[in-house]
Length: 255
Image 1 (cartoon, rainbow, N blue to C red):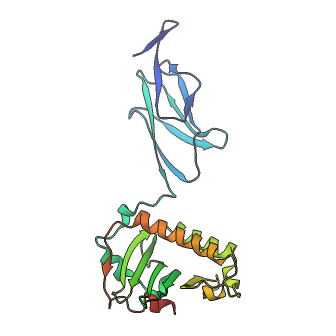
Image 2: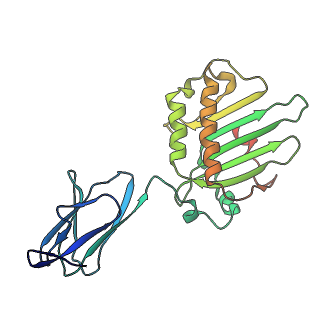
Image 3: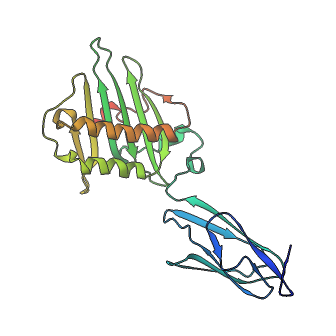
């Protein structure tokens, strides 16, 4: 409904969402209107909309955020905003039809990070769990493959797409904790770990728990936490077992 003030009908500017401000709540037809939107995050994309018949002009400045100007029509005007966090990865938008597609896409030369854990059981039933991040030749994100094997069972593998920030997190851990310079001998009885990561010069660094320092298990725990949490978050399909297809990718791949 229009508002009456000083004998001249006025109309409201309605904000559907938080973050909008304007000098007044109502304007007469023909009045210039300025609207601000200042809830701006650097990692977020915004889309704004208002009535179709409004000739809206949009600018941006550091003091006010988004700035919108228009001439008030003879009706109320409603502003709306939608946003999307650009740091969040939507696996449903990029996931191939089947996990087999991801497995077929894996190129061993594209290995970007490898975390391997072998458990040496006293009864001879050794097993291993391995998380490997692979770069893709095409498409967004990275492939995170999880390889598992227990005792005499065939190795199983399952894959999912994850954002590249997972690799960034792993690399931050190994760099900040000096993993490339491990040269001590604080291994863990009954368990053996291998890490493989790039050195920034085109080579892959390989270190093991036989070389880790006293705080090495903290590093191992941090890396396993990042990778297992990412796999749990983005993996949506059942694991696929194939003891022949991935020869050289699992335990053999890190020797």
